[in-house]
Image (cartoon, rainbow, N blue to C red):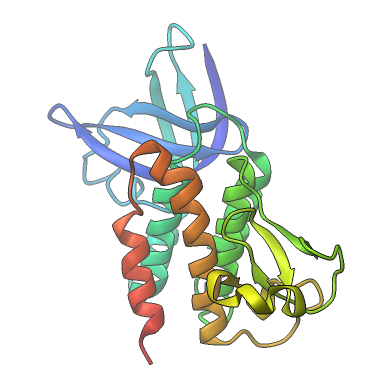
Length: 240
């Protein structure tokens, strides 16, 4: 049993004296683990860094075995972002949240979005909003997508400013006015006709929105908490 694919490093843990268990998010085979011989060596340690884009070959005697990876670096995002703590933390947060996907379940659309976002992590003007959109895509892939196109109460697409924390559906300003203290803010950049510069306040509102649904619909039912990296990311984004 063997295949070749490309993937993004999600985690690496030591195994024995010199090997490592590598967890990749691959394009065609989803979140997949395998053993890398010499994975802790001086040669491979820079390759097996969270967020790096690799070409990988996997081989096992049986399909349900752990198997072995052979890897080659395609793009070293970790090294490129080493001087930018906020972007590096964003990449680490994305990797941690990707681990919520079922093992060996392909999610090619999310893989494409992940590659797109990784390619912009060197541009602070755009990547925070892109990471919010990535989290929305992750919710969609997990089966908990939000409906932000029409008002849940009126069915209209205009003046959408809130999201119901229960249904995950957008709510217009007029319909939501009596309940606004109990609704989540829908930031401008997530509204259908939005364009232009994204404010820091809108980015934080976006993370509050996705964070609520990740917590209530995905993490809490699994008795899990939000990854520490995501909390550190928000701390960076709150700084002036």
